[in-house]
Image 1 (cartoon, rainbow, N blue to C red):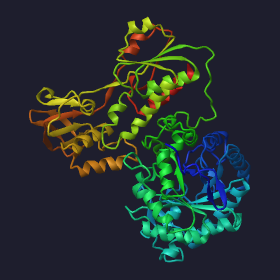
Image 2: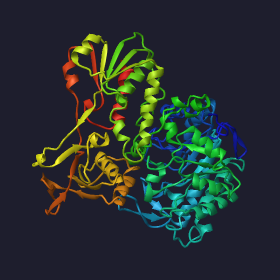
Image 3: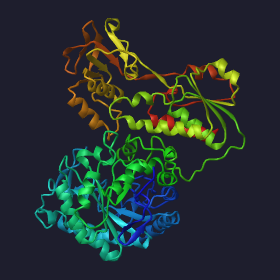
Image 4: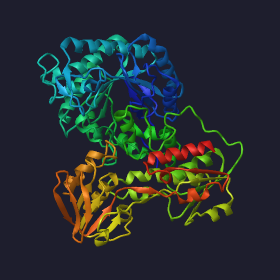
Length: 632
């Protein structure tokens, strides 16, 4: 299948972009503590430029001094570092834009501000309203930052007008109730955004390219599609050279990144309507993780450009591999949203579940000086990644998997509704192992004797974990099965089901069962549900359970199984009996560490990775596998 439009040049503000892909301005926290640009940040962007993306929108920079690892444009002393960055991007073959924040608004770590006195999401604090003269000051600071961006060699800047930050609050008819010239009617609400564009043009030059990132959201009405069209027309009139369409804000944070619950390209419905209403290019973001989907968006006139975010975090060479016809070599995003939890929630350097090299682009793999005979036991994602990296470096690698398929517990994780994108990582790794010549033996149950007979130089054990069955009084009186066996279709489940354990596994298993017509209840000893789910997925998972009528009991204690079902006390001490045909245990797993213990001291080099060390997330096991593969 050939691409028809994706690799054709496009034009923004008179500047030709070599293809229709633009890298999204995603925060990384890779800048230095003082806001300077360092080698780590440059290496990160250069890898994406070398990977073939047409233009890179460098993550949000700030025109004032802040407290976190964000790029700073507040003073001329930052220009040399920024010039290094833009030059490196240009040399690697991409156009270089940079996004500028007019302010984080209610999310500001120094002082929370907004268009009005509004609550700060998740804290209970209140942001104060900016005074009229302070808004004007923000506009002036933005203009100076745009001038510094041009002096730093960037081809243009982008105004961040989305995701519930300061500019988005001003644009919102729901939030902006100001009575000065920056509030009230649509024109006044857009005045701040319009003045930012004009300030950038006035200070950096009329020919300097200015883009605008706009959030559209028809769910919470932060900015409806009708409002967004009107705003886009005003921005075009003000001199904006392109509009980048996204969605979501603090009321629906999960829509910003779009977990696996969102369809691929979910913002194109907005972009298509806006594109028909203005005469400047429109780009669109939102789970565009397949080059054929990206090509279709351009070909069908839904947008002029596609904004690629996590697709390039996961695989910097996404465009290059597509152009070379190596689509099956693309490491695709799983839409798990772990990257967003780390950067936004934890405010740490971004990490990717499946790309362990993220943030370490300057560290290249070392070819081996001595080829070793490597045996990997366990074909889950950690074992597969260890085998891939070790083979990529030149080792002779063999993998033993006791079942008849690769993937480990991922094969179960993809069963609940909407979880299919998780198969991306297994498909990619299986394909790479085949291309690298790794010998995979299925139905091979590793033992001490069989391993000693094989005589490996190094053994990597990735045998995973086993589900725990709760030791509750009366367990013999009712049918108790594990969530793993339910998802694997190994057991029969009655019409009434109680799931013990309200973490992600329990909630997703409940969703699966309820979707198949079962009457489901969940009991959890903690005070919350899906605590280990990402912020991008949790609201949709809980919403689905509510829509299915799943009853959820938190903070339970003194659980006991009876012939009729499960009996427990709620947080108020009341006794509750839930009648059930089947109890499903989803209380966790325990490590399969028996093989590791039997091998200790018996072979030259032994490693253990993933859940067989301690049950954790897929990110941990993949990263550990990669680290071992690099070390051997």
